[in-house]
Image 1: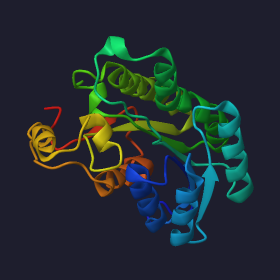
Image 2: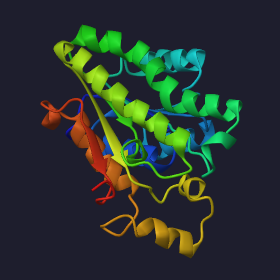
Image 3: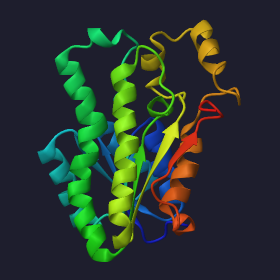
Length: 248
């Protein structure tokens, strides 16, 4: 019950790493808003986990949608004490000059603008309370980029830089900001990053991870609980690799 009494928002919380974080947060005592572009999946997970969860349809790249998300959470739980910016967009590997402008704008909207939008709503209440935790799910791609994912890598590098900048600014107000850098996980986004899901491509990916396996939602959730709990009260501005040694 390390998160007992906390009120959390997890964006992209209906599947993959987000669903793993939601499940673990509930098990640790938090009330959780599952914010997702897929309302059916969010509602199904909320029903499964019970009255400590609500589902909110949200497009994290859209200002009005994010405002509605925080209004819904405020009405249900009160102000959020934890925000996990997990919603993210991947892209298929391709030469950097081939991405069109619309895809670039959507990628940056989901992976970067979303952090700006949620912070505008979360930070004032956290400052007033004198406490809070923001967790950004970045990527090993922001630290050790793979070829042909240039703009995705750049968006996650932005998130890591934003984490550090937010942390140093918000520390005097009792608000901690950290990030997690997962390696590729066996989630719905994996096939996107690989371009194609074949045994040969999986073997090539796994060869770059010294521990020899993909990350799991449970791996990321364990790190998220620690970073958002009082156990990490002296930890801020960290971008923690949960990557099986990928960035070594």
